[in-house]
Length: 339
Image 1 (tube, rainbow, N blue to C red):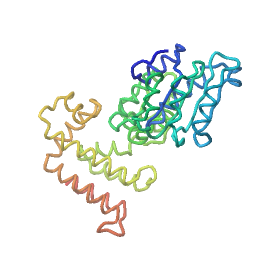
Image 2 (image 1 turned 90 degrees about the vertical axis):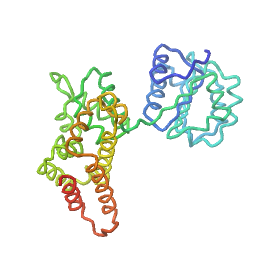
Image 3 (image 1 turned 45 degrees about the vertical axis):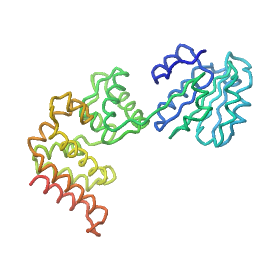
Image 4 (image 1 turned 60 degrees about the vertical axis):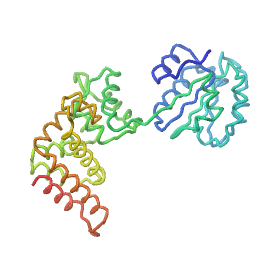
């Protein structure tokens, strides 16, 4: 089969479903989730159970060198139309150059899959370029923080489930950009969601994932913007009592990002929802939070708050405060922000 232009994840999976196979797949990148999904699909679907015993081989980079992989790739299938050879942890193979000789005349009946995780090889290498000519070179990049919310919404939609924006924010804040972890938790929510419940709610997230819908950084920001002193102090008291679930370094990082974005918002010439979402790289749903925050904290006050957060971070790390108590320095920070 002739090589196509660089394919997306969706197109690769679509081709596999239609039994359109390439002789070599190089699945690489910092985000392991898509690498695993594609390789698992090939492992589970190209051959039937009886054929797998004879014509499917899975090896690991720490156990093989490239000559062993080439020798295995040259073997003809015994029972099926194709032989499937999957090399997991391929990033542990040290020398690749000899692969070029196999790629000059690959066995058409072999589907060779390299799972090269947590990085990429030098794309200028001849063997990488040769795979690009006759097979699939797919790079799975880490999502940025601002992309996670829309990814969660899209994933839920693919499962025919809606999810509340607050639930999205809770999951984004608590689970970060680890897609494998996100998928595990989302699947848990989809399975545990009552049949008569049309969407994933914050209450469902709190019950099944263990994230408090009332005591998180998202709610702390809302309390600060609303100038709700009592609620803000209640939340940081909860943080102090549940340090493992709410590490201070993460809380400060989230607050710093919020107020840094707010500073940018103050100086945006176009404050329409679309323009703000584009410039701050946030979900349009959250633009209203910055509109409200700007009314509470002017540009000068916002700049001071950013300084307060930096000072608090330094004190937490022991600078000018060798015996820092997390609860006390957070109380002081909240006082400075709200007064």
